Length: 333
Image 1 (cartoon, rainbow, N blue to C red):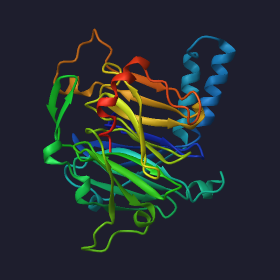
Image 2 (image 1 turned 120 degrees about the vertical axis):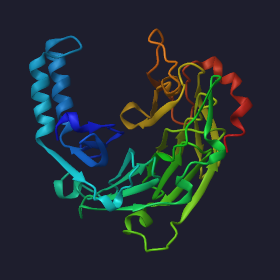
Image 3 (image 1 turned 180 degrees about the vertical axis):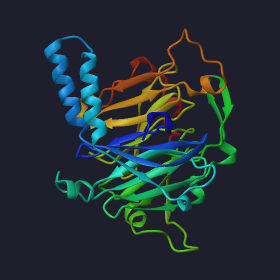
Image 4 (image 1 turned 60 degrees about the horizontal axis):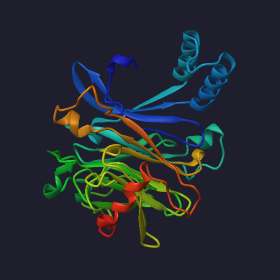
């Protein structure tokens, strides 16, 4: 697929077999067709070669010739999946993806294909389920995936704007067998069983069995699961914070809060390879949306929230801010 035809490449997700998958829109005749799921294989191997080359040459960047070699390695082994028209809607926009490879028990290729991908359609709310082993896909939808008309207005640091986006945040708990999701315009988190999603296309007129997990203090986009205890990690926008809630123990806490560095966290990830640290992408999207963004300010940040010891609490971006977090902690759920 030529790069100039790729529009709005959404989130990426790497599974245990070092396969990187991303959903994006295909541009044909200036018409956006969100119909492709792409798998890039051997990503971690290319990264390891890249790190080795950097270590041998010194410095932060390898020579240009290496980039050509690495790019060739990445793009040689690519599989593109084009979704049929009946799965999509005229306004469809595929924004997020999460992989469920809990059925895979080895790194052999036959086992690595034994996975499901759950992909959010934000503008035409729904979730597309892709079965990689059978190379089949279907669409599920529910009223909970639509934006709440009473929660379409956002307030971030005094900047107010309206955006009626549906389901966009999504994550997976292998231990609980659940997919958690949230529209942007809502203060709620919902869940649906992976067994239900994997059972195939829903029967006509059948309702998707969705559960309300809990309510947040404000809207949010990024969501993740800490697999050690199935804590749900999310970022309430109005509070410019990253918070955690365990649906099993009903305990919740504020991991970090910063009115400047945590504006509009578009992504939140629990990093297994970083000793359980939480990484977030702070985008200040509202500034771009209102066209008030300034090139003289830092508008995009990658933030790392470090946990000093499991069960010992997190160190926030600015520790002193935590003293003022009590005014909304109790309203998280």
